[in-house]
Image (cartoon, rainbow, N blue to C red):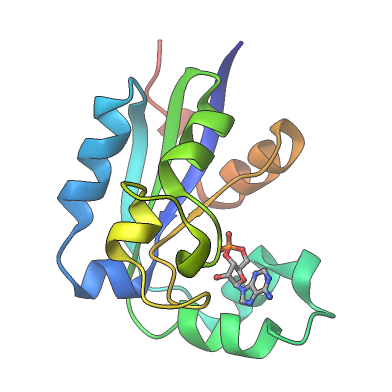
Amino acid sequence: ALERTLSIIKPDAVAKNVVGQILSRFEGAGLKVVATKMAQLSRAEAEKFYGVHAQRPFFKDLVDFMVSGPVVVSVLEGEGAIAKNRDLMGATDPKKAEKGTIRADFADSIDANAVHGSDAVETAKVEIAFFFPEANIYSR
Ligand code: CMP
């Protein structure tokens, strides 16, 4: 099905100057960037965005990391966009990510893991709405 997914290029990848390379991988796989912006997340925004992880032991490190520098937030659209983006990203832990995936190539650790992508249709809806009003998504 035609889907939308939320992508975040995290502070480590922005600092490494590989934003263009990562967006190119999305485009090369047939995903279309239908919204994008650079943003410095506040602690409150990062805590709210990752609210489902609030009780996990890694929550504080995750939030600290996500506010450590600017991120690039995008909406990607295409056939099976959610799974396609997850395949491109590779496993959450870059040590376990398959060769040629974004995390294998650009990530340093499970916290500094270069990218976030929505994991299901329902979470994609919530995550996209968190950053972009429908009027600022340019698909047709
Ligand atoms: P992300 O897809 O952005 O979703 C939550 C993030 O928490 C995840 O990527 C990792 O960067 C980070 N994280 C740190 N430790 C863990 C862990 N043990 N399991 C899952 N995610 C973790």
